[in-house]
Every structure is written in C-alpha cells, then in structure tokens.
Image (cartoon, rainbow, N blue to C red; front, side, top):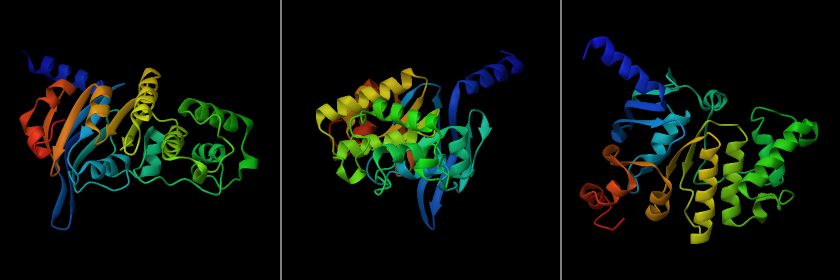
Length: 258
C-alpha cells in the first residue's frame, strides 16, 4: 500500500471521530491521575468509560470538557485541537457534561434552570427570555421526563428527578457530544432502564455520548463499546461482551464479576 493511500485511510478514519485523545496525561504534583491515555469516540456512538474508583475517569472528563488542561498530550474535537481550551468555549463548540454532584439553582424552578442553561453567560432574569427560549426549555423538560414538574424547585425533586434535571441542563447547551458522569448511581432498576432509554433516544437524534458508571450491568447493556482504565492507564477496549470476559478487567475490579 502506498504512503498516500495509507495517509488517506488514516485521514478518513479521523473524520469519523468526534473526539480523539492522544497520549493525554494529567498530573497533580507527584500523582499521575491520567497516564498517557489515547482513545477515540465515533460520531453517534455511546461509549462506556469505566474503571475502579480512583482510576482517573472524572479527571479525564475534566480535561476533555475544559475544566482543567492536561499536563501533556492532545485532545481533538471534530479534528480541531482543543487541548486546554476553556470550558465555556467548548460548550459553544458542542461539548457538554454532567456531574456526579448536582449543582442546580435551587431558587429557580426546573423550567427556569433549563432555560438559563441555554444562556450560560446571561445576566437576564427569566422574564427577559424570549418565548422560543422558554418553549425550548419546555421541550427539554418533556424530553427528559420532567414535563409534569416544571414549576417545582430542584430541592423538591427525588434523586432520579435531579439526575434528569442535570441532563436537561446539559441539553440546554445544544451539545453534539455529551459526557455523562455516573448517571445510574442511586437509581432503581426501572429508573436505570428509563435513563438508558433516554440516552438511546439522544443518540437516535444524532448525539454522541461517553458514559461513566460503576453499574456494569446497566452500562454494558447500553453502550456500543467500552474503554477500561486503571490507575489512569487504558487496560482494555472492546465490545461489552469482550469486556465482561476480559480477565484483566476482572482483576482490576478485585475479582468481582462484571
């Protein structure tokens, strides 16, 4: 195969990647949280990103979402090098994330929280929003299953409702790539199924998702492919079936069946 053909195939493969990490490292003093990590995410894929506690998963999300810059390595979004680009700029480019610790505005209603997420740098009051902003917020509330509680405040919601509000606030930024951190934690089996259905519907609408979770059964039933890290390093990559049977992954989870 000619060099030109090889390069063309490489370029073509890259065009299908919405996100690509190349040798990303994040250090905190003498502690290496993410260690020379490389992987890519394809357009409209649901990728599972798993590993034991302290493996470096959320730190990786922090680097991708612009919360912090990596110590070394490069991050590409739609072929553009976005390494170290701040979070607000990445939100404008189409990257959003959720957090394990929910941070809604408790003095605002569910509807107002989601409406405000559409204008993250705005100092306007809810009364100043255009009608289409409120309409879009209502559509998102319906989409995430909060259509009947739009006038409640976040502290009136159960845990599952708070999760849906967190997802709704992320959707308010109109992302193409959604990073979801521990969505299944604290949910019942039925709530996990409903949340997985929501993620599937987002993908059907054209979105790409990367999902962290410790609930292996819920996650592996949802995702197309899995990246596994331990101590900041990638130790396995494959389909959910391959990951379930991978002895390296089982050992990383202290011998627990996944």
